[in-house]
Image 1: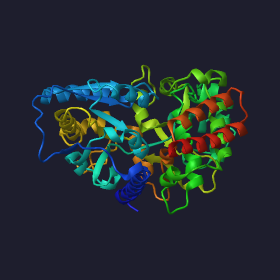
Image 2: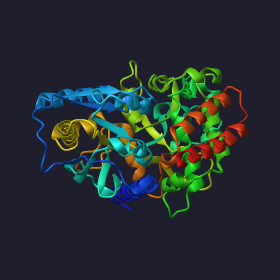
Image 3: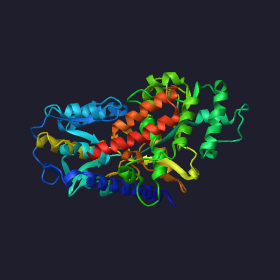
Image 4: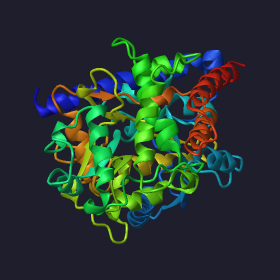
Length: 471
């Protein structure tokens, strides 16, 4: 299968998943309708001449400075100021709730996290079905819909896995002190092999010039999403995978989970924490930013994160990781047949426009989004600065991200014989479940909770959260 065809196939699989998610979200809505009365249009625009400022509440702290630069350019071109504010890591929903309470200071553009997020914010989402922002979407089934309305438009396809510094790995494979027979990373295609290499690297870490194989497993509240959400994706995906129905849809419908692959989760999680640059009793205070800096400074060889991680790596003072050396490995957990597993790929990033603000500000917000994803400056910023793999027809084949991690995601998506892992975690019943699970993981690494209790609590909490949603 050629590269373009392979990418298209994976992209269409994401479209099917997103379509199923949108359908599931609509089916779950009480009463089957919304109170949205605001419908925006690009063909018959509202007069925005009186608009001086619009406001975007950004979800991703790691690219906040990029958005601020984009906002300045937009103001220079149009005269309309784009205020950009960024929620702290793990605090987006709380920040959004606080700001939405005051119509005068509420964001005009905000983000919803798929159908689950739409359920929380449907009363605030303007109908975007008549806009070019929606019309330019490569596949309309990607959007969050309800009836004839479109209330969330995805702006990026992303992926995550185990990021590694190939310069350090090459040093290991050439070492006369290594105990494994592997010659390079192309041979590492399952958990057994990964574990052998990682544990052997720990034994000779001084020779390799590293403080640990993995960066800190950040378990500070608000910084634990890589584990309680992203790592949890693997056991959920394999438990719900049947080859017929999207695992995201099945997760949304799951009234309970068996946590069948709990031991697989434990295996990779233990590998991270047992071969880390940080002692377990210190992980509760570690942040994502700190762990990314550890990788950037060459103190560790590997770290779990997504293609959005390149920006914090590249702008770390003293960064030693070269673009050609930053690579991806799937998150192997010991599941049968994982040799054909790819990265975790999906989309949970949906822009929405606040229908509670003045209609002219709503229109001005749409104008900004259309400019960002269709103008020459905007597209260049999306590709080069934000590093997005954007799902819009306005982007040509040669307008792909320069971000080396985004390139790696595309390369893995295009590999023959490899299947990407759906972002099944989008069906997790609530943020509260994630927070509870993250807290349990911290207790586990600190020796305050047995693993079987972590599993039991996760299963029990899932049932509780589902029942609360049904009330």
